[in-house]
Length: 248
Image 1: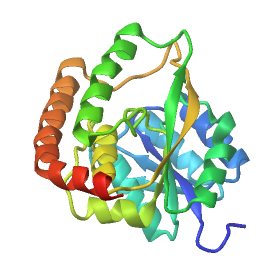
Image 2: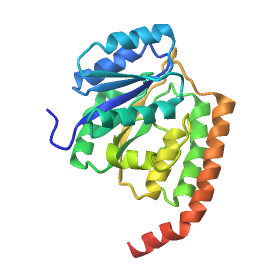
Image 3: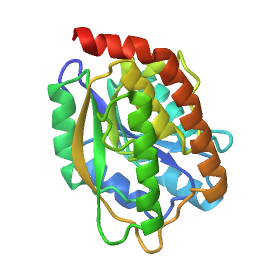
């Protein structure tokens, strides 16, 4: 039974992840966490798997009419989770990369500090592609510049628990990137709003037969454009950000 005012669920954006998805959902159900599956225009095989999973207790389904991208699917899922009466939403990928053995720690942190955004920062094993590992550091540097702070340990890890009221207030105010740029942009913009954040390590494994929807050139261009927009946004906000820190 959820505590009054704290009623979490998991939001899982799904796009052709029919193989790993049942295992991810199974782990979340064993942790007694309701799941909202966001079908982001999956193929017929994956849609059938999603439909079967949605027959289980405490499994909700939101089917989007066409592929919206990871960010679009997550945002739709967060809004649906709030509509269903949940107070917090765990964003977790459907590809099985995230180790869910520490899920209880994330839930406990969110329960203890319900206004806080609880974020995972990855602990990679040897399966991580080196190109991805090194490329992340460029985004880290840009995020630190755009926040004028080192508070965001890793903006690209899509394993985090959002407090829905504060998150939806941002979504209702700002137009965010709808694809692979989403995870980073929402954290920077929440940092600008002085959103409390708490960081916990999470192990990440890249399965040898894993499916990635990251499009090298297209998504890197999107991410570069996002960093540029955030940089100019930071310049406009810099006096206020620095003043707040001076008087804190």
